[in-house]
Image (cartoon, rainbow, N blue to C red; front, side, top):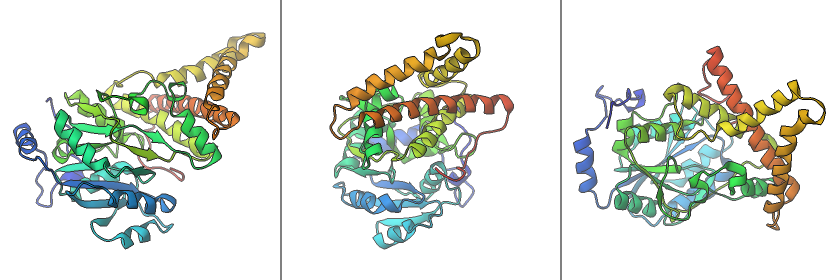
Length: 362
């Protein structure tokens, strides 16, 4: 399996013992756990608009071995905590002084007692068989992490445009967890379902050295790097509510770009080099402006705008999607991601260090 990373401090037991497992213990656990217990970990921070419906979908799960729903909250002041507190068992509110999702996952993992950990997101709703299908696929495949598709659902006019843009390779590239229609091995999935021992053995999530919100793909890179297997199964169903404003979408995708570079800096590799394409767009545009002459100075952004216009017209075939909003979503996603990659590279070059906690908007 290779060398294991240093265990996160949150995963050190109260007796000071390191809570890692041996490979033989893991195999024994999996072989003799046909109906594993499940701990759900749900990071939250200012989620009042989503949390009640999210919890309703979690409490409506048809898997009878869910023993706890750990809502790990980063200090919400909008009423999120009150909604969670009213839910009652098996929902339990846990404080997250680290604020970030990575910090929440580590705190939740230290609290969790289930055989399996299902990571969830408050901006999503889950099919009644979501947890059951996660566990079944985990057992059927012998994988280390399983998950389903990231199916976006916009609830505003701009949100619907973002959902359309993130549901096509024209917007987000060929990432399998956006569109796969058959079970397959992948390099990452939306959220994830793991044996608890796998997460502990990996040392938990990195909430210190990488850009915040980069925790899932960085963890999965470590997992596959040591020979682990990740399986996507489209029968694991959920819907995700994407950003509903241009500003929120721009911040999200810029941070995605920075996050990818923080992972590159930590591991000196990425599972795929696709994220560099938006950076090529930005650098090519800057180069054209600097050395081009006449109309050729704008050749790269003009070509990209033409591409986005064509993609927006295709997205606009859905009567709920306005082509001009889809065009804006494509442009914002690509340019913001590209600038994020360049910002991340600048952070590496200047040695400033990445931001492990969000400042202001998340």
